[in-house]
Amino acid sequence: MTIFGTGRNGVRERGLQIFVDVLAEFAARVRVPGVTAVQERCGAPLAVAVRGRGGVGRGAVAAALADSGVTIATDTVGADVQVLVIAEALKPEDRSAAAVPTPTLVVLNKADLTGAGRPLDAAERIAAQVAATVGLTVVPMIAHLASVELDDDDVAALRTLVTHPADMTSTDAFVQSQHPLPATVRRQLLARLDRFGLAHAVLALADGASTATVTRQLRALSQVDRVVEHLDGLAAPIRYRRVCAAVHELQLLAARSGDRRLEVFLTSDEIVIAVMAAAVEVVQACGAAVDRGHDADAHMRRARHWRRYSRGPVDLLHQRCAADIARGSLRLLGQTR
Image (cartoon, rainbow, N blue to C red; front, side):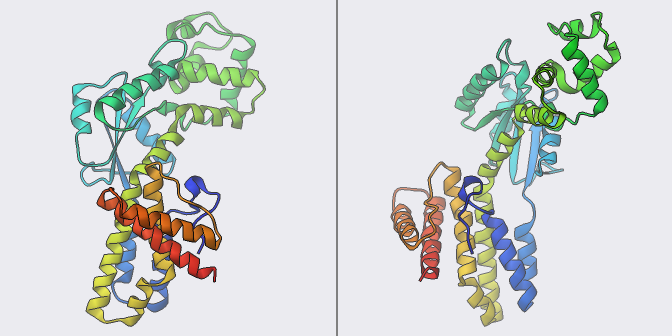
């Protein structure tokens, strides 16, 4: 099994998914009672609750995340991770919503409205200030640009704005000024893109961009992928704990059933390395670098480093992760011989 490669964060697949896949294969092959139930619980999608006061664009953020493959919780109680959506500034009710035990990512939505001239720079400054106040990661976002789809009529209208520039000093000026493009069409474009997205779309088309390129650029401006990346890191400890809980359940099941096949499976390279993969994600989410080498020397270096790390002044979670990385590295070392 290869877990190191060129994938994002150096992990070819999520450790949790590797573990679930290995467990599903074992369950299908040997049909030990109870294993499939553990596998299904472990593999259930992590649920993300999206919260925020009225008017901050909570629904737009939730839709953008759902379109990006994130499972949105229908009930905020019991969600694995929370996204707290704010806009403009941190309000007292935002502070209360942030003070919960659920792992929380703050999204500063409507980043395009945070300042004149260079609104995204202003949004980054506000995000840094909010982060310092609440002690959480804060990511600026323009949620309504994340899932924009432009059809031929949209592109034709935007090209008209390229050849006949409109007054975009304000929303009223854009809609009410004299222009070859009907006011109803301008109003529709404004509702979907707002002035910031509209201006970027027009400039991109003026530079010769294709429709697909404009759509990609608008998505990039939305920052949705950055939000998803931070959510991925925030959820790494949850995925790791799920793996550890599943291993514990299976150990109890093996002890009760006396099934030797399950005992052997739980000490197999596949399981040890899958647990290692989940542990790697946790330490990388905290900014630690993990040696991604494939040869024997790399596996030995990694095992020694993380064994030392596990005995250092770190919390219990990182002690366990470090020990699992060291254990998995030794298994990988054994496979090279």
